[in-house]
Image 1 (tube, helix red, strand yellow):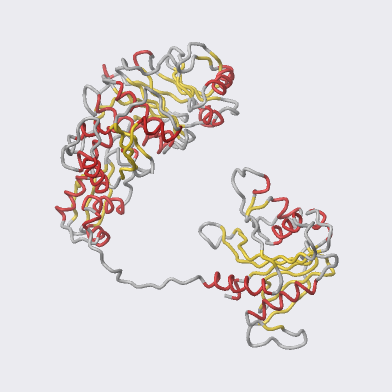
Image 2: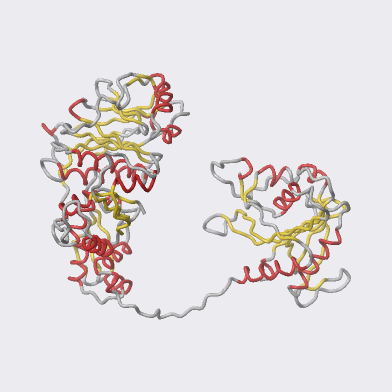
Length: 606
Protein backbone atom coordinates (compact mmCIF):
# COMPACT_ATOMS: atom_id res chain seq x y z
CA UNK A 1 0.00 0.00 0.00
CA UNK A 2 1.37 3.47 -0.88
CA UNK A 3 2.04 5.85 1.98
CA UNK A 4 0.95 9.50 2.02
CA UNK A 5 2.67 11.96 4.37
CA UNK A 6 0.38 14.80 5.49
CA UNK A 7 0.79 17.64 7.99
CA UNK A 8 -1.60 16.82 10.84
CA UNK A 9 -2.69 20.34 11.61
CA UNK A 10 -3.38 21.16 7.95
CA UNK A 11 -5.31 17.89 7.64
CA UNK A 12 -7.44 18.67 10.70
CA UNK A 13 -8.05 22.23 9.48
CA UNK A 14 -9.32 21.05 6.10
CA UNK A 15 -11.28 18.20 7.66
CA UNK A 16 -13.03 20.50 10.12
CA UNK A 17 -12.21 18.20 13.03
CA UNK A 18 -9.34 18.30 15.53
CA UNK A 19 -10.55 16.01 18.35
CA UNK A 20 -9.16 18.43 20.92
CA UNK A 21 -5.65 18.61 19.46
CA UNK A 22 -3.78 21.92 19.80
CA UNK A 23 -1.62 23.18 16.91
CA UNK A 24 1.73 21.39 16.71
CA UNK A 25 1.16 19.67 20.07
CA UNK A 26 1.09 15.86 20.40
CA UNK A 27 -2.36 14.46 21.13
CA UNK A 28 -2.75 10.68 21.61
CA UNK A 29 -6.52 11.17 21.86
CA UNK A 30 -6.66 12.88 18.45
CA UNK A 31 -4.35 10.26 16.96
CA UNK A 32 -6.62 7.50 18.23
CA UNK A 33 -9.79 9.20 16.96
CA UNK A 34 -8.31 9.80 13.51
CA UNK A 35 -6.96 6.23 13.44
CA UNK A 36 -10.50 4.94 14.05
CA UNK A 37 -11.84 7.13 11.25
CA UNK A 38 -9.16 5.76 8.92
CA UNK A 39 -10.09 2.21 9.84
CA UNK A 40 -13.76 2.86 9.17
CA UNK A 41 -12.90 4.32 5.76
CA UNK A 42 -10.58 1.45 4.79
CA UNK A 43 -7.20 3.16 5.14
CA UNK A 44 -4.60 3.03 7.91
CA UNK A 45 -2.77 5.56 10.05
CA UNK A 46 0.65 3.97 9.75
CA UNK A 47 2.77 6.37 11.82
CA UNK A 48 2.76 9.67 13.70
CA UNK A 49 6.10 11.41 13.23
CA UNK A 50 7.83 14.61 12.09
CA UNK A 51 10.44 15.60 9.54
CA UNK A 52 13.03 15.77 12.30
CA UNK A 53 12.14 12.30 13.62
CA UNK A 54 12.28 10.83 10.12
CA UNK A 55 15.79 12.22 9.57
CA UNK A 56 16.95 10.95 12.97
CA UNK A 57 15.57 7.50 12.23
CA UNK A 58 17.08 7.29 8.73
CA UNK A 59 20.48 8.96 9.22
CA UNK A 60 21.00 9.27 12.96
CA UNK A 61 21.03 13.07 12.79
CA UNK A 62 18.66 15.85 11.76
CA UNK A 63 19.30 19.12 9.98
CA UNK A 64 18.71 22.32 11.94
CA UNK A 65 16.07 23.32 9.39
CA UNK A 66 14.17 20.05 9.89
CA UNK A 67 10.58 20.77 10.89
CA UNK A 68 9.03 19.39 14.08
CA UNK A 69 5.49 19.73 12.72
CA UNK A 70 3.47 16.57 13.35
CA UNK A 71 3.11 14.40 10.26
CA UNK A 72 0.60 11.62 9.72
CA UNK A 73 1.82 8.81 7.46
CA UNK A 74 -1.29 7.18 6.01
CA UNK A 75 -1.36 3.92 4.04
CA UNK A 76 -3.95 3.92 1.25
CA UNK A 77 -5.03 1.15 -1.16
CA UNK A 78 -2.83 0.89 -4.25
CA UNK A 79 -5.80 1.42 -6.61
CA UNK A 80 -7.14 4.55 -4.87
CA UNK A 81 -5.15 7.14 -6.81
CA UNK A 82 -7.53 9.85 -5.58
CA UNK A 83 -6.22 9.42 -2.02
CA UNK A 84 -2.55 10.05 -2.81
CA UNK A 85 -2.71 13.75 -1.87
CA UNK A 86 -4.26 15.80 0.93
CA UNK A 87 -6.85 17.26 -1.46
CA UNK A 88 -8.32 13.89 -2.43
CA UNK A 89 -7.98 12.36 1.02
CA UNK A 90 -9.73 15.22 2.81
CA UNK A 91 -12.45 15.38 0.16
CA UNK A 92 -13.16 11.64 0.46
CA UNK A 93 -13.18 11.72 4.28
CA UNK A 94 -15.47 14.78 4.43
CA UNK A 95 -17.92 13.04 2.08
CA UNK A 96 -17.64 9.90 4.22
CA UNK A 97 -18.53 11.70 7.46
CA UNK A 98 -21.27 13.71 5.76
CA UNK A 99 -19.63 17.14 5.79
CA UNK A 100 -19.88 17.78 2.05
CA UNK A 101 -21.52 16.22 -1.01
CA UNK A 102 -19.67 14.53 -3.82
CA UNK A 103 -18.44 17.31 -6.13
CA UNK A 104 -19.58 17.58 -9.73
CA UNK A 105 -16.66 17.95 -12.12
CA UNK A 106 -17.44 20.06 -15.17
CA UNK A 107 -15.91 20.68 -18.57
CA UNK A 108 -15.69 24.44 -19.08
CA UNK A 109 -15.95 26.32 -22.35
CA UNK A 110 -12.54 27.49 -23.62
CA UNK A 111 -11.96 31.23 -23.83
CA UNK A 112 -13.38 32.62 -27.08
CA UNK A 113 -14.45 29.03 -27.86
CA UNK A 114 -10.87 28.50 -29.04
CA UNK A 115 -9.97 25.02 -27.81
CA UNK A 116 -6.28 24.19 -27.55
CA UNK A 117 -5.04 21.37 -29.74
CA UNK A 118 -2.32 18.72 -29.37
CA UNK A 119 -1.32 16.78 -32.49
CA UNK A 120 0.74 13.58 -32.33
CA UNK A 121 2.87 12.66 -35.34
CA UNK A 122 2.98 9.12 -36.68
CA UNK A 123 6.58 8.64 -35.47
CA UNK A 124 5.55 8.57 -31.78
CA UNK A 125 3.64 5.32 -32.34
CA UNK A 126 6.90 3.38 -32.17
CA UNK A 127 8.14 4.76 -28.85
CA UNK A 128 5.42 6.33 -26.64
CA UNK A 129 2.20 6.36 -28.63
CA UNK A 130 -0.37 8.12 -26.44
CA UNK A 131 -0.81 11.70 -25.23
CA UNK A 132 -3.76 13.28 -23.38
CA UNK A 133 -4.11 16.88 -22.16
CA UNK A 134 -6.22 19.29 -20.12
CA UNK A 135 -6.03 22.85 -18.80
CA UNK A 136 -6.67 24.27 -15.32
CA UNK A 137 -7.50 27.99 -15.40
CA UNK A 138 -7.06 30.67 -12.72
CA UNK A 139 -5.37 28.42 -10.20
CA UNK A 140 -4.15 29.93 -6.92
CA UNK A 141 -0.90 28.38 -5.68
CA UNK A 142 0.50 28.57 -2.17
CA UNK A 143 3.78 26.86 -1.17
CA UNK A 144 1.75 24.03 0.42
CA UNK A 145 -0.51 23.56 -2.61
CA UNK A 146 2.48 23.70 -4.95
CA UNK A 147 4.28 21.02 -2.92
CA UNK A 148 1.17 18.81 -2.95
CA UNK A 149 0.87 19.33 -6.73
CA UNK A 150 4.44 18.10 -7.30
CA UNK A 151 4.14 15.26 -4.75
CA UNK A 152 1.02 13.85 -6.42
CA UNK A 153 2.79 13.77 -9.78
CA UNK A 154 5.67 11.84 -8.24
CA UNK A 155 3.35 9.35 -6.53
CA UNK A 156 1.42 8.74 -9.75
CA UNK A 157 4.72 8.24 -11.60
CA UNK A 158 5.81 5.59 -9.11
CA UNK A 159 2.41 3.91 -8.69
CA UNK A 160 0.18 3.63 -11.76
CA UNK A 161 2.99 4.94 -14.00
CA UNK A 162 5.34 2.11 -12.96
CA UNK A 163 8.31 4.44 -12.52
CA UNK A 164 7.33 6.44 -15.62
CA UNK A 165 7.56 3.46 -17.97
CA UNK A 166 3.78 3.41 -18.54
CA UNK A 167 2.81 7.00 -17.76
CA UNK A 168 4.61 10.31 -17.28
CA UNK A 169 3.18 13.74 -16.49
CA UNK A 170 4.26 17.15 -17.74
CA UNK A 171 2.84 20.36 -16.25
CA UNK A 172 3.46 23.74 -17.84
CA UNK A 173 2.75 27.44 -17.29
CA UNK A 174 0.33 28.01 -20.14
CA UNK A 175 1.01 31.75 -20.20
CA UNK A 176 4.64 31.14 -21.26
CA UNK A 177 3.79 28.98 -24.29
CA UNK A 178 1.50 29.17 -27.27
CA UNK A 179 -0.72 26.53 -28.87
CA UNK A 180 -1.35 24.54 -30.91
CA UNK A 181 1.08 21.92 -29.61
CA UNK A 182 2.70 18.94 -31.31
CA UNK A 183 3.86 15.65 -29.89
CA UNK A 184 6.73 14.37 -32.00
CA UNK A 185 9.53 11.80 -32.05
CA UNK A 186 12.90 13.00 -33.38
CA UNK A 187 16.56 11.89 -33.39
CA UNK A 188 18.25 13.09 -30.15
CA UNK A 189 20.64 15.43 -32.00
CA UNK A 190 17.70 17.36 -33.48
CA UNK A 191 16.13 18.15 -30.09
CA UNK A 192 17.61 21.23 -28.40
CA UNK A 193 16.32 23.00 -25.29
CA UNK A 194 17.23 24.07 -21.77
CA UNK A 195 16.01 21.42 -19.30
CA UNK A 196 14.24 22.24 -16.05
CA UNK A 197 16.31 24.41 -13.68
CA UNK A 198 19.05 24.97 -16.25
CA UNK A 199 19.78 27.94 -18.50
CA UNK A 200 22.01 26.01 -20.91
CA UNK A 201 20.51 24.71 -24.13
CA UNK A 202 21.62 21.22 -25.13
CA UNK A 203 20.64 18.49 -27.57
CA UNK A 204 19.22 15.09 -26.61
CA UNK A 205 22.60 13.33 -26.42
CA UNK A 206 24.16 16.12 -24.35
CA UNK A 207 21.10 16.16 -22.12
CA UNK A 208 21.44 12.46 -21.29
CA UNK A 209 25.12 12.93 -20.39
CA UNK A 210 24.26 15.99 -18.29
CA UNK A 211 21.48 14.22 -16.38
CA UNK A 212 23.66 11.16 -15.84
CA UNK A 213 26.17 13.32 -13.98
CA UNK A 214 24.00 15.97 -12.36
CA UNK A 215 20.53 14.56 -11.72
CA UNK A 216 20.69 11.54 -9.43
CA UNK A 217 16.89 11.51 -9.00
CA UNK A 218 16.36 11.18 -12.77
CA UNK A 219 19.00 8.51 -13.49
CA UNK A 220 16.57 5.57 -12.99
CA UNK A 221 14.37 6.90 -15.82
CA UNK A 222 17.05 7.58 -18.45
CA UNK A 223 17.17 3.96 -19.76
CA UNK A 224 13.49 4.21 -20.79
CA UNK A 225 14.45 6.11 -23.96
CA UNK A 226 18.25 6.54 -23.82
CA UNK A 227 19.08 3.83 -26.36
CA UNK A 228 16.19 4.65 -28.69
CA UNK A 229 17.03 6.15 -32.12
CA UNK A 230 14.25 8.71 -31.55
CA UNK A 231 13.11 10.59 -28.44
CA UNK A 232 9.53 11.79 -27.77
CA UNK A 233 9.27 15.59 -27.49
CA UNK A 234 6.47 18.16 -27.14
CA UNK A 235 6.64 21.54 -28.91
CA UNK A 236 4.46 24.62 -28.90
CA UNK A 237 3.64 26.58 -32.08
CA UNK A 238 6.91 28.55 -31.75
CA UNK A 239 8.97 25.34 -31.55
CA UNK A 240 9.62 25.86 -27.86
CA UNK A 241 10.20 22.50 -26.14
CA UNK A 242 7.72 21.84 -23.36
CA UNK A 243 9.07 18.46 -22.29
CA UNK A 244 11.09 15.41 -23.21
CA UNK A 245 8.82 12.61 -21.93
CA UNK A 246 9.25 10.69 -19.72
CA UNK A 247 12.47 12.34 -18.48
CA UNK A 248 12.24 16.07 -17.90
CA UNK A 249 10.33 19.28 -18.66
CA UNK A 250 11.78 22.33 -20.33
CA UNK A 251 12.82 25.25 -18.15
CA UNK A 252 10.92 27.72 -20.33
CA UNK A 253 7.43 26.57 -19.24
CA UNK A 254 8.15 25.51 -15.65
CA UNK A 255 5.45 25.92 -13.01
CA UNK A 256 6.01 28.56 -10.29
CA UNK A 257 4.00 29.95 -7.39
CA UNK A 258 2.88 32.72 -9.74
CA UNK A 259 1.46 30.32 -12.33
CA UNK A 260 -2.25 30.84 -12.96
CA UNK A 261 -3.03 28.68 -16.00
CA UNK A 262 -1.68 25.16 -16.21
CA UNK A 263 -1.38 22.83 -19.18
CA UNK A 264 -1.26 19.19 -18.07
CA UNK A 265 0.03 16.72 -20.66
CA UNK A 266 0.31 12.98 -19.99
CA UNK A 267 2.24 10.71 -22.32
CA UNK A 268 1.95 6.96 -22.02
CA UNK A 269 2.23 3.50 -23.47
CA UNK A 270 -1.21 2.68 -22.03
CA UNK A 271 -4.08 5.01 -22.97
CA UNK A 272 -6.39 3.87 -20.14
CA UNK A 273 -3.78 4.60 -17.49
CA UNK A 274 -3.00 7.93 -19.12
CA UNK A 275 -6.68 8.95 -18.88
CA UNK A 276 -6.84 7.88 -15.21
CA UNK A 277 -3.77 9.96 -14.37
CA UNK A 278 -5.07 13.02 -16.24
CA UNK A 279 -8.48 12.76 -14.54
CA UNK A 280 -6.83 12.41 -11.13
CA UNK A 281 -4.60 15.46 -11.57
CA UNK A 282 -7.47 17.57 -12.87
CA UNK A 283 -10.01 16.47 -10.25
CA UNK A 284 -7.62 17.01 -7.35
CA UNK A 285 -6.38 20.50 -8.26
CA UNK A 286 -9.39 21.98 -10.05
CA UNK A 287 -10.44 22.63 -6.45
CA UNK A 288 -8.10 25.65 -6.52
CA UNK A 289 -9.46 27.10 -9.76
CA UNK A 290 -11.50 30.29 -9.70
CA UNK A 291 -14.39 28.25 -11.07
CA UNK A 292 -14.13 25.33 -8.69
CA UNK A 293 -13.97 21.84 -10.25
CA UNK A 294 -14.07 23.27 -13.79
CA UNK A 295 -11.62 21.78 -16.28
CA UNK A 296 -10.85 23.14 -19.74
CA UNK A 297 -10.63 20.45 -22.45
CA UNK A 298 -7.96 19.99 -25.12
CA UNK A 299 -8.44 18.40 -28.53
CA UNK A 300 -5.93 15.61 -29.08
CA UNK A 301 -5.27 14.21 -32.54
CA UNK A 302 -3.45 10.90 -32.21
CA UNK A 303 -0.79 9.47 -34.51
CA UNK A 304 -3.42 7.81 -36.71
CA UNK A 305 -5.33 11.08 -37.20
CA UNK A 306 -8.24 10.40 -34.81
CA UNK A 307 -9.50 13.43 -32.87
CA UNK A 308 -10.60 13.06 -29.21
CA UNK A 309 -11.51 15.63 -26.57
CA UNK A 310 -9.77 15.16 -23.19
CA UNK A 311 -10.30 14.81 -20.32
CA UNK A 312 -13.27 12.45 -20.25
CA UNK A 313 -14.67 13.14 -16.78
CA UNK A 314 -18.13 11.71 -17.43
CA UNK A 315 -19.37 9.29 -14.79
CA UNK A 316 -19.49 5.64 -15.79
CA UNK A 317 -22.30 3.35 -14.63
CA UNK A 318 -21.97 0.00 -12.88
CA UNK A 319 -24.92 -2.26 -12.10
CA UNK A 320 -25.22 -4.41 -8.98
CA UNK A 321 -27.88 -6.76 -7.69
CA UNK A 322 -29.16 -5.85 -4.22
CA UNK A 323 -29.56 -9.49 -3.22
CA UNK A 324 -25.91 -10.06 -4.19
CA UNK A 325 -24.86 -7.11 -2.02
CA UNK A 326 -26.87 -8.29 1.00
CA UNK A 327 -25.72 -11.89 0.62
CA UNK A 328 -22.05 -10.93 0.26
CA UNK A 329 -22.01 -8.36 3.07
CA UNK A 330 -24.11 -10.55 5.34
CA UNK A 331 -26.49 -7.78 6.37
CA UNK A 332 -30.16 -7.38 5.44
CA UNK A 333 -30.02 -3.88 3.95
CA UNK A 334 -32.90 -2.19 2.18
CA UNK A 335 -32.61 -0.02 -0.92
CA UNK A 336 -32.55 3.30 0.95
CA UNK A 337 -29.81 2.11 3.30
CA UNK A 338 -27.65 1.03 0.36
CA UNK A 339 -28.13 4.41 -1.33
CA UNK A 340 -27.04 6.22 1.85
CA UNK A 341 -23.98 3.99 2.31
CA UNK A 342 -22.87 4.43 -1.30
CA UNK A 343 -23.21 8.20 -1.03
CA UNK A 344 -20.66 8.07 1.79
CA UNK A 345 -18.22 6.46 -0.67
CA UNK A 346 -18.78 9.14 -3.38
CA UNK A 347 -21.02 6.83 -5.40
CA UNK A 348 -24.52 7.86 -6.55
CA UNK A 349 -27.40 5.46 -7.23
CA UNK A 350 -29.19 6.79 -10.32
CA UNK A 351 -31.65 4.00 -11.11
CA UNK A 352 -33.40 1.11 -9.38
CA UNK A 353 -34.88 -1.79 -11.34
CA UNK A 354 -37.49 -3.35 -9.04
CA UNK A 355 -38.12 -6.31 -11.34
CA UNK A 356 -34.46 -7.37 -11.31
CA UNK A 357 -33.79 -5.84 -7.87
CA UNK A 358 -30.77 -4.10 -9.38
CA UNK A 359 -29.29 -0.67 -8.86
CA UNK A 360 -27.37 1.42 -11.38
CA UNK A 361 -24.55 3.41 -9.80
CA UNK A 362 -22.79 6.48 -11.18
CA UNK A 363 -19.03 6.21 -10.60
CA UNK A 364 -17.14 9.54 -10.71
CA UNK A 365 -13.92 9.96 -12.69
CA UNK A 366 -11.90 9.84 -9.46
CA UNK A 367 -12.99 6.25 -8.67
CA UNK A 368 -11.21 4.28 -11.39
CA UNK A 369 -11.03 1.37 -8.93
CA UNK A 370 -14.78 0.69 -9.28
CA UNK A 371 -15.31 -1.52 -12.33
CA UNK A 372 -17.61 -4.36 -11.18
CA UNK A 373 -20.55 -5.14 -8.94
CA UNK A 374 -18.14 -6.62 -6.39
CA UNK A 375 -16.56 -3.16 -6.00
CA UNK A 376 -20.00 -1.70 -5.26
CA UNK A 377 -20.57 -4.43 -2.69
CA UNK A 378 -17.17 -3.75 -1.08
CA UNK A 379 -17.92 -0.04 -0.73
CA UNK A 380 -21.27 -0.84 0.88
CA UNK A 381 -19.46 -3.07 3.39
CA UNK A 382 -16.84 -0.37 4.13
CA UNK A 383 -19.47 2.32 4.61
CA UNK A 384 -21.56 0.01 6.83
CA UNK A 385 -18.49 -0.80 8.96
CA UNK A 386 -16.58 -4.06 9.08
CA UNK A 387 -16.65 -3.98 12.89
CA UNK A 388 -20.45 -4.02 12.78
CA UNK A 389 -20.67 -7.16 10.65
CA UNK A 390 -21.93 -10.19 12.53
CA UNK A 391 -19.56 -13.14 12.64
CA UNK A 392 -21.41 -16.12 11.15
CA UNK A 393 -20.01 -19.66 10.81
CA UNK A 394 -19.68 -20.69 7.16
CA UNK A 395 -22.59 -22.71 5.80
CA UNK A 396 -20.22 -25.15 4.08
CA UNK A 397 -17.65 -27.01 6.14
CA UNK A 398 -14.53 -28.19 4.38
CA UNK A 399 -11.45 -30.01 5.52
CA UNK A 400 -8.13 -29.08 3.97
CA UNK A 401 -5.72 -31.79 2.94
CA UNK A 402 -2.65 -32.22 0.80
CA UNK A 403 -3.16 -32.64 -2.94
CA UNK A 404 -2.69 -36.25 -4.00
CA UNK A 405 0.15 -35.44 -6.43
CA UNK A 406 2.05 -33.69 -3.61
CA UNK A 407 1.37 -36.57 -1.23
CA UNK A 408 2.77 -39.09 -3.72
CA UNK A 409 5.74 -36.76 -4.34
CA UNK A 410 6.60 -36.57 -0.63
CA UNK A 411 6.32 -40.34 -0.17
CA UNK A 412 8.57 -40.98 -3.16
CA UNK A 413 11.14 -38.45 -1.95
CA UNK A 414 11.48 -40.25 1.35
CA UNK A 415 11.78 -43.73 -0.12
CA UNK A 416 14.17 -42.73 -2.93
CA UNK A 417 16.42 -41.02 -0.37
CA UNK A 418 16.43 -44.29 1.60
CA UNK A 419 17.88 -46.05 -1.45
CA UNK A 420 21.00 -43.85 -1.23
CA UNK A 421 20.14 -41.11 -3.73
CA UNK A 422 20.53 -37.47 -2.68
CA UNK A 423 17.78 -35.01 -3.53
CA UNK A 424 18.63 -31.79 -5.36
CA UNK A 425 16.53 -28.74 -6.18
CA UNK A 426 17.39 -27.09 -9.50
CA UNK A 427 16.14 -24.06 -11.40
CA UNK A 428 12.88 -24.44 -13.33
CA UNK A 429 14.34 -22.13 -16.01
CA UNK A 430 17.24 -22.95 -18.30
CA UNK A 431 18.70 -21.79 -21.58
CA UNK A 432 17.27 -22.93 -24.90
CA UNK A 433 20.70 -24.29 -25.87
CA UNK A 434 20.91 -26.45 -22.73
CA UNK A 435 17.40 -27.81 -23.16
CA UNK A 436 17.82 -28.75 -26.82
CA UNK A 437 21.29 -28.46 -28.38
CA UNK A 438 23.23 -29.77 -25.38
CA UNK A 439 20.76 -32.66 -24.99
CA UNK A 440 21.08 -33.46 -28.76
CA UNK A 441 17.38 -32.78 -29.24
CA UNK A 442 15.59 -30.88 -31.99
CA UNK A 443 13.37 -27.89 -31.24
CA UNK A 444 9.84 -29.22 -30.65
CA UNK A 445 7.93 -25.98 -29.93
CA UNK A 446 6.83 -27.38 -26.57
CA UNK A 447 8.83 -25.04 -24.36
CA UNK A 448 7.51 -21.86 -22.75
CA UNK A 449 9.73 -18.89 -23.58
CA UNK A 450 10.46 -16.15 -21.05
CA UNK A 451 9.81 -12.66 -22.43
CA UNK A 452 12.85 -10.34 -22.19
CA UNK A 453 15.02 -12.71 -20.10
CA UNK A 454 17.66 -10.98 -17.99
CA UNK A 455 20.21 -13.78 -18.53
CA UNK A 456 20.83 -16.33 -21.29
CA UNK A 457 20.58 -19.20 -18.81
CA UNK A 458 16.96 -18.31 -17.99
CA UNK A 459 15.40 -18.24 -21.46
CA UNK A 460 12.79 -21.00 -21.22
CA UNK A 461 10.97 -23.21 -18.73
CA UNK A 462 12.55 -26.66 -18.68
CA UNK A 463 10.90 -29.53 -20.53
CA UNK A 464 13.18 -32.15 -18.96
CA UNK A 465 14.48 -32.78 -15.44
CA UNK A 466 17.78 -34.12 -16.77
CA UNK A 467 19.12 -30.67 -17.72
CA UNK A 468 19.22 -29.56 -14.09
CA UNK A 469 20.67 -32.88 -12.91
CA UNK A 470 23.47 -32.76 -15.50
CA UNK A 471 24.30 -29.16 -14.53
CA UNK A 472 24.44 -30.26 -10.89
CA UNK A 473 26.87 -33.07 -11.75
CA UNK A 474 28.95 -30.59 -13.78
CA UNK A 475 29.38 -28.30 -10.77
CA UNK A 476 30.08 -31.19 -8.38
CA UNK A 477 32.42 -33.34 -10.48
CA UNK A 478 35.20 -32.89 -7.89
CA UNK A 479 33.04 -34.54 -5.25
CA UNK A 480 33.67 -38.19 -4.34
CA UNK A 481 32.15 -40.69 -6.78
CA UNK A 482 29.63 -42.09 -7.28
CA UNK A 483 27.19 -39.19 -7.47
CA UNK A 484 23.63 -40.45 -6.99
CA UNK A 485 21.17 -37.59 -7.44
CA UNK A 486 17.42 -37.26 -7.95
CA UNK A 487 14.79 -34.54 -8.19
CA UNK A 488 11.00 -34.62 -8.26
CA UNK A 489 9.52 -31.40 -9.57
CA UNK A 490 7.61 -29.86 -12.47
CA UNK A 491 8.42 -29.46 -16.12
CA UNK A 492 6.37 -26.97 -18.18
CA UNK A 493 4.94 -27.77 -21.60
CA UNK A 494 2.82 -25.92 -24.13
CA UNK A 495 -0.68 -27.25 -24.63
CA UNK A 496 -3.91 -26.10 -26.26
CA UNK A 497 -5.95 -28.00 -23.67
CA UNK A 498 -5.43 -25.29 -21.02
CA UNK A 499 -6.73 -21.74 -21.20
CA UNK A 500 -3.30 -20.40 -20.21
CA UNK A 501 -1.62 -22.31 -23.05
CA UNK A 502 0.67 -24.38 -20.83
CA UNK A 503 0.62 -27.03 -18.11
CA UNK A 504 2.91 -28.33 -15.39
CA UNK A 505 3.85 -32.01 -15.32
CA UNK A 506 5.34 -33.64 -12.21
CA UNK A 507 8.43 -35.66 -13.22
CA UNK A 508 11.03 -37.73 -11.42
CA UNK A 509 14.60 -37.49 -12.70
CA UNK A 510 17.57 -39.47 -11.37
CA UNK A 511 21.21 -39.75 -12.40
CA UNK A 512 24.10 -42.02 -11.43
CA UNK A 513 27.64 -40.78 -12.17
CA UNK A 514 30.71 -42.95 -11.57
CA UNK A 515 33.79 -44.27 -13.36
CA UNK A 516 31.55 -46.97 -14.81
CA UNK A 517 28.08 -46.48 -16.17
CA UNK A 518 26.15 -48.10 -13.28
CA UNK A 519 23.05 -48.66 -15.41
CA UNK A 520 21.84 -51.23 -12.93
CA UNK A 521 21.53 -48.54 -10.23
CA UNK A 522 18.99 -46.43 -12.10
CA UNK A 523 17.23 -49.59 -13.32
CA UNK A 524 17.01 -50.75 -9.72
CA UNK A 525 15.63 -47.35 -8.72
CA UNK A 526 12.96 -47.62 -11.43
CA UNK A 527 11.96 -51.05 -10.14
CA UNK A 528 11.73 -49.71 -6.60
CA UNK A 529 9.55 -46.75 -7.65
CA UNK A 530 7.23 -49.12 -9.50
CA UNK A 531 7.10 -51.47 -6.55
CA UNK A 532 6.15 -48.58 -4.23
CA UNK A 533 3.26 -47.74 -6.58
CA UNK A 534 2.07 -51.36 -6.88
CA UNK A 535 3.07 -51.58 -10.55
CA UNK A 536 4.26 -55.02 -11.64
CA UNK A 537 6.77 -55.98 -14.34
CA UNK A 538 5.31 -57.41 -17.55
CA UNK A 539 7.23 -60.29 -19.09
CA UNK A 540 7.60 -60.00 -22.88
CA UNK A 541 6.26 -63.48 -23.56
CA UNK A 542 3.28 -63.24 -21.21
CA UNK A 543 -0.06 -61.47 -21.57
CA UNK A 544 -0.57 -58.13 -19.81
CA UNK A 545 -1.58 -58.37 -16.15
CA UNK A 546 -5.06 -57.24 -15.14
CA UNK A 547 -3.69 -54.46 -12.93
CA UNK A 548 -1.00 -51.82 -13.48
CA UNK A 549 2.15 -53.01 -15.21
CA UNK A 550 5.28 -51.68 -16.90
CA UNK A 551 7.97 -52.81 -19.29
CA UNK A 552 10.79 -51.40 -21.43
CA UNK A 553 10.99 -51.09 -25.20
CA UNK A 554 13.67 -49.69 -27.52
CA UNK A 555 13.89 -45.89 -27.47
CA UNK A 556 14.90 -43.25 -30.00
CA UNK A 557 15.79 -40.57 -27.43
CA UNK A 558 18.99 -38.90 -28.78
CA UNK A 559 20.21 -37.92 -25.29
CA UNK A 560 21.09 -41.58 -24.58
CA UNK A 561 23.40 -44.12 -26.20
CA UNK A 562 21.58 -45.94 -29.04
CA UNK A 563 22.56 -49.35 -27.67
CA UNK A 564 21.68 -48.52 -24.07
CA UNK A 565 18.36 -46.67 -23.98
CA UNK A 566 14.76 -47.68 -23.46
CA UNK A 567 11.32 -46.12 -23.19
CA UNK A 568 9.43 -46.85 -19.97
CA UNK A 569 5.92 -48.10 -20.78
CA UNK A 570 3.16 -47.96 -18.19
CA UNK A 571 -0.10 -49.68 -19.19
CA UNK A 572 0.93 -49.30 -22.86
CA UNK A 573 1.62 -45.55 -22.48
CA UNK A 574 5.13 -44.11 -22.55
CA UNK A 575 5.85 -42.27 -19.29
CA UNK A 576 9.62 -41.85 -19.47
CA UNK A 577 13.04 -43.00 -20.61
CA UNK A 578 16.04 -44.76 -19.07
CA UNK A 579 19.56 -45.38 -20.30
CA UNK A 580 23.21 -44.34 -20.44
CA UNK A 581 23.76 -40.66 -21.28
CA UNK A 582 25.29 -40.06 -24.72
CA UNK A 583 29.02 -39.07 -24.59
CA UNK A 584 28.32 -35.92 -26.65
CA UNK A 585 25.79 -34.80 -24.05
CA UNK A 586 28.36 -35.39 -21.31
CA UNK A 587 30.91 -33.42 -23.32
CA UNK A 588 28.43 -30.52 -23.76
CA UNK A 589 28.00 -30.37 -19.99
CA UNK A 590 31.76 -30.88 -19.41
CA UNK A 591 31.26 -34.10 -17.41
CA UNK A 592 34.30 -36.45 -17.66
CA UNK A 593 32.58 -39.56 -16.24
CA UNK A 594 29.91 -41.87 -17.68
CA UNK A 595 26.38 -41.32 -16.38
CA UNK A 596 23.17 -43.30 -16.50
CA UNK A 597 19.82 -41.66 -15.89
CA UNK A 598 16.07 -42.01 -15.94
CA UNK A 599 13.16 -39.62 -16.16
CA UNK A 600 9.51 -40.54 -15.70
CA UNK A 601 6.22 -38.81 -15.10
CA UNK A 602 4.71 -39.72 -11.75
CA UNK A 603 1.26 -38.35 -12.56
CA UNK A 604 -0.01 -41.72 -13.90
CA UNK A 605 0.46 -43.15 -10.38
CA UNK A 606 -1.99 -40.66 -8.85
